[in-house]
Amino acid sequence: MTSDLDFMTALELRGLIASRSVSPVELTELALARAEASQGTLNAFSHLMPEEARSAARRAEEAVMRGGPLGLLHGLPASVKDLIAVGGQPYASGSRAMAGNIAAADAPSVERLRAEGAIIIGKTTTSEFGAKPVGDSPLTGITRHPWDLTKTPGGSSAGAAASVAAGITPFALGTDGGGSLRIPAALTGLVGLKAQFGRVPVWPTSATPTLAHVGSIARNVADAALLTSAVAGHDPRDPFAVAGPVPDLLGAAKASVAGLRVAWSATLGYARPNPDVAAVARAAAMALADQGAIVEEVDEVFESDPADLWTAEFYAGIGTRLRSVLEARRDLLDPAVADVLDAALAQEMRAYYETVFARYALRDRMVSFFTGYDVLLSPTLPISSLETGRNIPEGLEDRSLVSWAFYTYPFNLTGQPAASVCAGLASDGMPVGLQIVGRSLGEIDVVRAAAAVERTQPQGYNLRPFTGQ
Image (cartoon, rainbow, N blue to C red; front, side, top):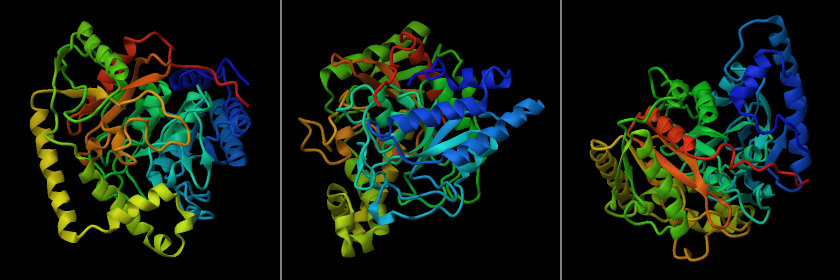
């Protein structure tokens, strides 16, 4: 099932809606039909909301016909990951331990989606509590890659990436506690954008409250900037929420990178990328020099791999939330997740706080590093694809559930803004992600660098219509 509207950008669709050339009801019906038709193969949604979506689309269409002011996302179909609360809808976080849970109220990001006129068509799949960077959970099963159904779209925002890559919605709301936006964006050729920690408020309180971001997955940088702009801004329910005005991310997507100081690192000092992936990512980074950026190669960004610091914080939070389930109904949990939760909960208090202070030192190191650069570029992942059913890629079996990803989790520890954009295709025909990290509160530079990379790529080369039913 394909349509001329499937791979239009959100900004293009918004213009067509405003001019009354396309109806919100028409777009919503197309999105629902594509979602339902692909569910048996992609399995991108944990829950569809057809009646709620149709009702919202009718209200959006009436507003267009009245000629009143329209929101940033007016009439655009969107989805929300199942780690984000949508009031009155299932809120299971990909876990059988939470099956049947219903959200009492909308998260702030969902409130803002609705306020800006978006049409929420459903909740997308996630690995259990976002604890794995691949697309499966005991509750919802396997979510698959639209380009190749034998591959994972990555995780934990698995369904969000699969649905956007398949042309179901132009963008999706996801989360990122260790790379969960950037990892699936890299594997599916999309853009994943996490703004500064706290820029998009998180509530109800996450199981990983010092690491979790809500952010955007989209087909291009401008659409990711649009969605992030719509949901960003202070909210008193999130104690970490950033005060002050939201940066002009849409303007940044059009800005020049002339004079931008860029550091490129193939390994950050410790990663082991596939040489093919590293070469594709490096070429995309170096091409920024053609647009006036000053690009410098840097071997060592970190003195050592901060995986243990991230693991101590992330899995201790989830483990604390799930302690009663671990002790009484362990069989409900993903065995791989349960095992890492055991280790995290076994930490002694002194050892845990040693990692906390090491994290502060890591932040100080990044502040110093970014006195010399505006953005840091690296591969997003060491690989271009991963088969379904695997938690860890071949050749990286010495790494943990998340540490095999190497590049993403450090910047949840520091809270810096970061994005993944498609750098090109690897020799296996699958996409390669380029990660772009900015200094604290530096979303403008991240977005303008990501858009500049996007301009070096052939238009639409990373979009492939999904025809599987």
